[in-house]
Structures are given as structure tokens and as C-alpha cells.
Length: 147
Image (cartoon, rainbow, N blue to C red; front, side, top):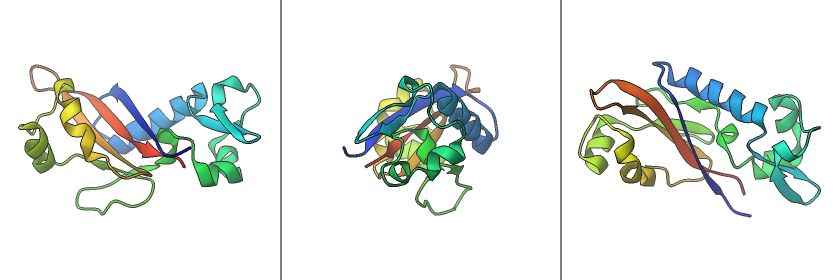
């Protein structure tokens, strides 16, 4: 099947890890991820008897190998200067934002400029997006996962 790209916008909160956890909970509850029944992966929301917990979901061998092709495949936002590792989300640094978007204060208008910063499967990125007054407004999570 190959890796799938995914992206999400959520309301801003200063704790990026808490924002990621809340987003993962929402995506899981809504069944907005790929899940296999037999050989073919399908959207989990098509199955009323899909796994009831994330633990149950990730106990499935197919999910362990193939992933969910969603934000569920990443589990933690990295701290500053921490090296990216499998299943982690790296915030866009001020230097990266300035290099690719020409500003350190990103907005929705900069999404196309920063999308290329997520280029490796099984890793995610996130960026704080600001409103026209420069106030943090949203967090953008995006990446690629799944096999």
C-alpha cells in the first residue's frame, strides 16, 4: 500500500504533547484511521466492532506492521534539541520557518511552504499557526505513516 500522508489542524494550546494526545483520542474515537479486516485495510469507522482501546488496536499484528496511516502512528512531541525518532513529532523550529516561509511566525498561508519539512515515513511534524495579530491560534500536525 505504501505510506500515506495525513494532516490535522487543532486549536492552539501551549502544551503540544497534550494537543497531540487529545487529537489522537479524537481520531481513535471517530475511527478516522485505516484498519484491516482480512487482507484489505479500510476506514475503521466502517466497523462498529473495531478495537475499543488503542492498546487493543496496537496489539493487532497487522497494525504493528502496517500502521494506521494516521496521527495514531506517532505518539510523542519532541522537546527542543531532541533528535527525531520513529513515531515522534518534531516541532518546526524558528530557523526552519524562517528558511522555508520567510517568517518565524507561521500562519495558515504558510502551510504549502512548510509541508515539505515532513519527508520521512513514521515521523510527524507540527507547527504553531498564528492569527493576523500574531497570536497563536492553531497547531498543524502532519506527516506520513503506514506501509
